[in-house]
Structure formats: structure tokens, C-alpha cells
Image (cartoon, rainbow, N blue to C red; front, side, top):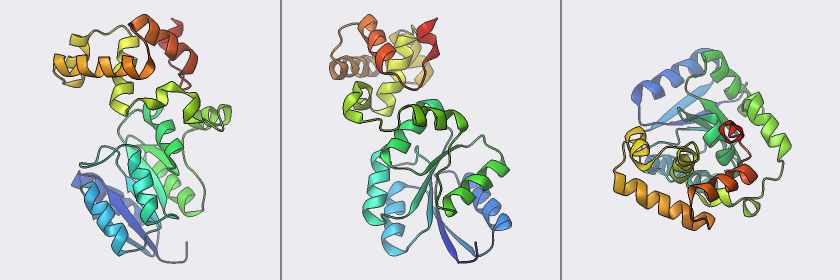
Length: 219
């Protein structure tokens, strides 16, 4: 990596940004790191400066889910995007890779894994776990129009999975720290989007279309 590289680390936690920056600067030469703690700053920096890589936390304040990938590419089409998240890879990785991200790395990963992900990005490669690689190979096209679950937002998908697992509104509210009325609203929205009228119908949709391997459905 002889040429100079500009990296944008987007995360609302200063410790995460500083830690990632320190790892990169210690491991690689000729690197400049810019920080952003809210998504509007990400867009601002992208408009002001060319970057080689954006390390993006999907839970960043002012974020817009998978749409953030498109918003970033609208400004800098060729920039590499590495999703760096504490969220479950099985639940979120495929959705962001389908949206156009180049890699997905969990925040629980080791320093070596972070370095490997960075090296892959800078070598014009993708980076994700072997498990996700297998799922992508199994469903190479993954056309959103073919899968009704793609109509769900990340939060809706999360709640739908809990419903399929057998959790009621109260349990879901406690797990996700949501009001019971909010869970009910999400549940209605999920049923409407998937054209089902019961949890049994929801389970049937997941059995057919859940490509991320929801093992509990087979139990």
C-alpha cells in the first residue's frame, strides 16, 4: 500500500473511532483518518474530500439503514464501504452487502480480522465471514423483488424473527426496550407488508423465503 490512503471512520462512539484509527495507523503507512460521529457529517466529508474507504457503523445517529450505502455512492461511486457493526452478522450482513457494501465486520472481531478486512478493501476485494460467503454463493443474484422479506426494515425484520420464535408483544417490548403499543404497530406493519394475518402465516413466509438460515423454524 504505497500510495496515500484517506479513510473515513463513521461511528458515534469516540473510543471505537480512536481505536480503529490507532490500529490502522500502526499497521499501515501513509494513512490519513477522518472521523464522523453522525451521518450528516459523513455526507459532508464525502463532499469535501476523496476517500478510499468508509468504515460505517449502521447504528450511527441520523443514519438511514441500507439507504446510507446508496447515499454514500451517490457522492463517491468508487469508495469502498466496510460495515463495522455490533449487530448480528446473520441478521444484517446480507442486507447491507446486497445494498452495495463491500464488506461486513462485527465489532467483536479481533485486531487481526480488522486489519485483514482493511487489506481486502484496499486490494479491491470484498470482506465477510465464510458463513456469509456461502450464503452469497447459494443466492448469487438475491433479487429483492423475489423475496417479500426484503420489504421489511431492519427493525421490522428483527421483530418478525422474534414473533416467529414465539415471543409475544410484551417479551419483544422488554427485549428491544419498546412500548407495547410500538410493538403492536410494527406487528401490524409486518403483517400488511407480507400479506399475512397471523403468526402462523408469518412462519410460513419465513420457511420459504428466509435465506439467512433461521434454524429455529426447523425445531
